[in-house]
Length: 365
Image 1: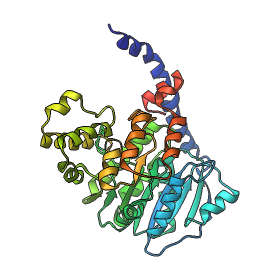
Image 2 (image 1 turned 45 degrees about the horizontal axis):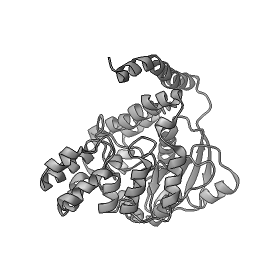
Image 3 (image 1 turned 60 degrees about the horizontal axis):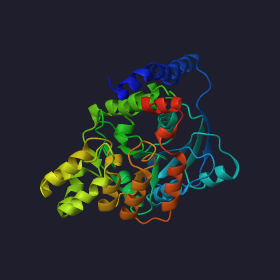
């Protein structure tokens, strides 16, 4: 029996304890809280100063205790330029100058207690918008993304003006097809549908990332699937294909470093494929997982995508050196050093304590 197998067996009891403490117990606590009808998660609502006609709203989740970072500011500015009414859902206490700053840039600021994380915030925001306004379309965003200025207003305009039932930058085919929670929009008839609202009314906000993905993101997609007839997806492998087709074999082979480590091709594959075969392989590898990760640098370089996940290093998709080199090739941005410093400070899942590393590996952190 090899060392890797022995380590896996040794960690199994710890994994079971971690899952019980940080997932099973959290589910039980959330169920008891709902049964007891405890204090609501939504604590306060503040009138904002920025309202637009047209009926398009964005439920924008943030967790920024210290300050409003540049990427959140970019998103707020671009949403305003796109004529979108921002319902800013803040998952922590907020007061004084920071509250005044954010109310000046939004239609409403909702303060909540972070129960259920972002999906729990989406629930509160959805029910608030449904009860308060008559939206023609609703965008859902959170701050797990770096929002770059270039092309961002255009993306939000496309999401706001789409005639499709669901519009989103990317699709995710990892494990099962689902709507990724960081950025998407829905049409009025979807937002007001019984299935959509019943999902949010019934959703149990649990403080577990595993629950948020399985019961939240995937659960939402399952609720939407029967009624969604049309989708607008702005960055896809097939839209990327024409840019790759025009490249030489050497240029294509270099792009292998743009793929996350688990998706990257071995050197033998790179040299064996013909140019058309290599284009096909890139498109396939981008398609099969979370495309904001697999297409992170390809979509930025060739299609001007203004979004990038903040967890590329933490989730072990790329090394810091690879991110540094890739960013230098795909974009020029005044916040380049801030991105790298933030990632370096947070580190990777492997830098965590043993207990937290097991939480990370189990998907609850």
